[in-house]
Length: 273
Image (cartoon, rainbow, N blue to C red; front, side, top):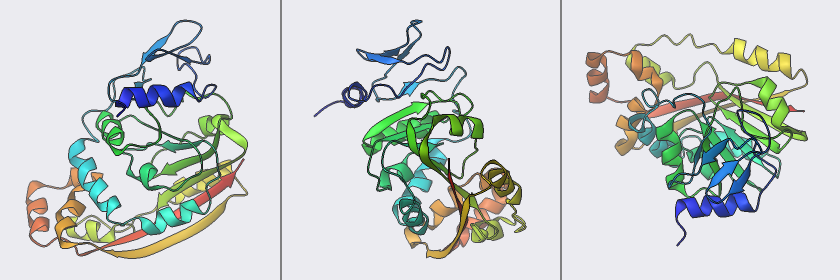
């Protein structure tokens, strides 16, 4: 059985002309277990099979394994099946980029004809993603300085994560599609209620910005109620950054009677270049 680093080497060796140096923006090519550009900037594949392209320290404090593990279990349980189903209707065959892939479960579960690329700032997330056996390439990368050549992606997937439309447009192919998933008004309302967080959730500014960038975009509203298995109800309380602002006492009370259902209410924005 191939080691993770060997799988990544094999994947990259068969797929040149995708990556660029985040320092000088020249193409990088595989040289043994490293990626190098003509200026000799070097980025090593580590034993887990991913590359750190960051010019700053990765996030090791906020989005950690402690939060990613319950999130993964809930995604695997089918909590976001309705969202994935709609995304799969819109993806274009070819190279797919998952922006802010986190621990990689969305990318892993997504049915797609082509190669998968995922990146994040969170070290724990990318290291967990390498555990899934994704047939693709993972990296620690900066949203504002993507380590990819121009026009190499047929689909850019942006689920619950920040955007950089300048970079998205640069790396998107001429016939490519951008799929952005934005939480809508009632998203995870049960979690907000149990934590005493106001339900006046409004992401209209995010949607308006997308429409400004892509005036001819399409919009799909997705709303489902997911019944949470009893064994996953504590996970539901720990899967989101929402808990970061909640006191220890409120958390303890919530764990005594965790929600049984989760409202998945999102907007899928679809734009073609």
